[in-house]
Length: 452
Image (cartoon, rainbow, N blue to C red):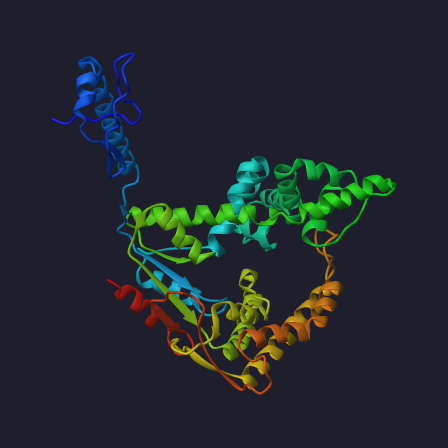
């Protein structure tokens, strides 16, 4: 029986002429040494046994490690369905989700409009437990999160005492100050790059650092030396290259995505409006999770969006549900993220007409300008270093031509001679298209429920 030899371990009798090395071959990733009778004659039996034992131990160890790895990385096959529903703001996603949950209550809903405020509330509970304890007596966690995130007045619980309500409002005001974007982002800078932070802090106050980084509004301390100012300016320039402002959003997104995957693994079906659908799909691969999954796209024609957002905002203000209010241009700009001019061979979703696009833009621009002008007369924003209402209005009006050109170019109307453009989705994979202008929510819901 041929005896393998560990590479480079030809055994020779002391003082003898080294024997000719045997020829080698490859089998998988193992080095195989062909039989050489001279080596056998010269190798002590005990040494050969040791070699065999080393090889067998090595192979067994590798086999056990491979099995351990396989057990740790088994594919997870989930039973709960995941329906990823995409679409720009005001395209009709919420109506479809509400209808589905009405007709199929076993489906759960997830998305950043719900999940991010809840995570904000959880952050508040963890970081400021005493303040949170006072507020939670008077409102729900999601309302606490929305108050922190977008400044909405919570829906206060009925039948609470005046003292409880007063304490909750005072605590919420303090909490918003502690967790406002400027303070939060300045804290992120301090935690992630303390050296840069300390250099800027020589010349700026804590909140001023965040305003300088994220709102481009710089205010230096009085009576600082030229050397300190120069050093702080260099640190500010270096800090601007970092992405401190998205770290918390990345963490929130990861937690939200993983919660959806876990719900599916436990057998719960989820309709999901993700922050970034490609990142979510990549996370499923990363988790080795295989779940029944479909992707749908809620589509509303561009020229309908402007009127739809107008009606939405009127209803939101009248009902007191300010979280439903949208800046009029946001849906139109979001439309450009989901759709693009079709190339030959692409599936055409719709045909855009220049006249309708320009008219819809002008109407939405006017809506937003009126809103900003009204806000300009109200109390200044917090913190005071952020742009004032007048400044935001003036800046917005100056950007009219630039904003319009960007939208028209993205939709294929860069040349004045182009009057019509066929569009397709910019997403790589879509299983269902829901044209919410012609389809009722119950029709879309029926399609989702019929998915086997």
